Length: 446
Image 1 (tube, one colour):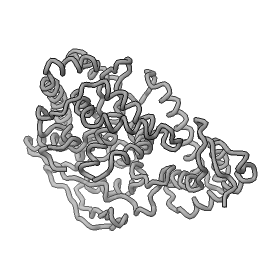
Image 2 (cartoon, helix red, strand yellow):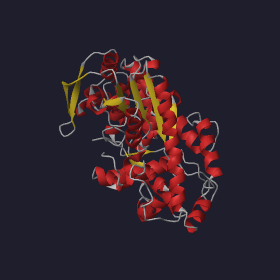
Image 3 (cartoon, one colour):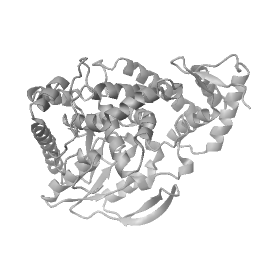
Image 4 (spheres, one colour):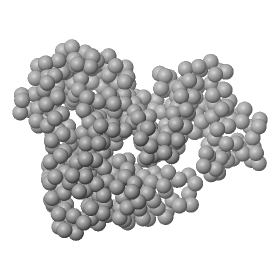
């Protein structure tokens, strides 16, 4: 039994010590450099604990930084230099991330597509929906349907531009990658782009990258012991590259099949070959991740990045956060389509967010075009559907040191939603709207 019972987090909070979190962190670092032996990670974690117990115990409690220092030492001394480097890099990036979040409004954030943001903000200003107060006033004036119409028109115009870019390169293009963080509207956007391309005689052939997951037993876990499906390293990136290269050269490949019930992948199951008028479609969180398609020349792929880049200020002058919009979207979608409790979504959002900040958003600058999927009118709908939930959660997690992230998010979203005039009637929203992907009633099948 471990002598160490508790550990101090960076916030100063005292939480139970858990050796599994150490082995999970080591394994995640190993996976990033191609290693997939959990037993080695577990043995290394045991060495870490042995060293820690030489200095710490129930009365002398370690800080999280103390534990991480020992992890680095054990990795290096056991000859795992590459893993140590990845672990150190990740630790450094997390420190930078925390500093960036503390300075959220800073214009030095390189992950924000400033040119696109300027256009979105200019559009919101011209349509007088750049402040919650203005949005509420329009609702009071019975202009909700007008807000829906102008928002949908702006979204559709962006898709027209994206398709024009695709057609300009159609002679060399082999694949279109629709990517972006969770609940950014990839499925609906993909359907709409395909409809436009079909009018020009082209069609998509989907390469479902979910079938390229490694067996569940080889998956990395997050610091809470949950299997991390959000990381690109849960996918067999080497096989994806090999198949994309062959498909783009006109060769046939056999796609694997991943059985989610068994957590097991079966190789060479479904034959696939691309014909002359067909374009490979990849709808994936990680389409912009460099290793995802590193073997494919740029002229053969078009990369489309989606994000709800809503530009609307709250009463305190701060902007509505995009991640909060996507959190609500995912709650609504998962509760209907995947029988996943919204509270579970809130509790798991910490590692969704952590992975996208490291593996998705930093590569948005690699996109050929960015589409803003944020709709000003979606906020009144969410105020009607979710305000009471967030009010309950903001209280529920207030005294739980293990749910600090859930409490902060719940409280922030609650403070946002209670400023907005709720709308329960969604009849003005088109059946093919990207928002229907989350609230239901879509003409598309998901």
